[in-house]
Image (cartoon, rainbow, N blue to C red; front, side, top):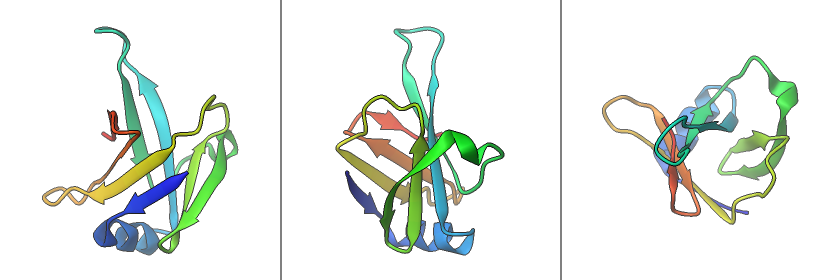
Length: 94
């Protein structure tokens, strides 16, 4: 898996403990869209597995994720200082 992280996002993740947990949320309508949720901490770390170590942080994905994405991008939203990500060009973090 190729992880591409902006410098600002990597710095924020590092400052908040050096771990990024990316999980999926499936929508209930409109074709069951998938949204990625990115957090620097989680209450249920046992449900995640380390997927990559890049740019000074570790990336964790759900343990039950069937297929690992080919590529994941991580960036920092400018105004809200919120981490955003998408993989394989189609799903965005909220």
